[in-house]
Image (tube, rainbow, N blue to C red; front, side):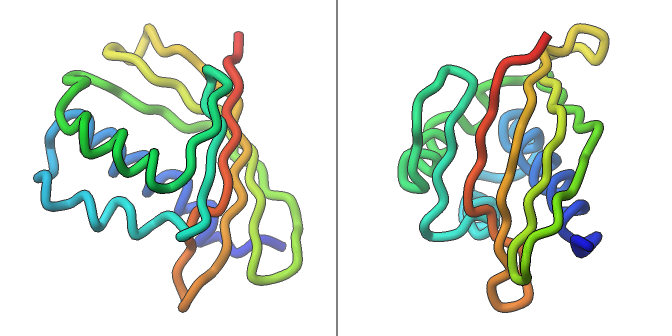
Length: 129
């Protein structure tokens, strides 16, 4: 069974990301945000482009407060059993400036426990109907 703290991490990270894009947290919080990602993190976004951790950090650094009104909703989180210290979770993520007008994506995340904290290892996002 996947540790429920991994399920919580899916929501917690997206709260931080929403706060970042809305400038509800200061620019100095970038290190706190990036600390949630493993050093070898990579992701494939809905545009199909692979980004490593450095590219994700650059994206965040350049976009603090860039999406005022952004809302991120997470639903349908499902965990897949993996050997410790790994967790794999599938979830739906909706983003938009109004809750009723969210654009949805299907996501699959692999997390790894490092020093007692979940760190994001890989993320794959696909546009969803």
